[in-house]
Image (cartoon, rainbow, N blue to C red; front, side, top):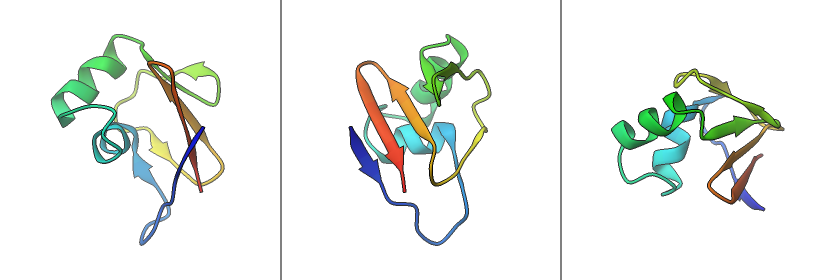
Length: 69
């Protein structure tokens, strides 16, 4: 499990999180992966690309797990 430290804001949108962590090369790729149901938040498939991810949540994508702190 990898940690992502959220600074300067109370949340980050899901598609941006995938992009800034390098799990997706572009924001467009991140949006497509979310739309295809390949991303889960706290164990549930998430289809909203602008879903607000806050500290304490966990995001899983293609074998990677991010813990937002």
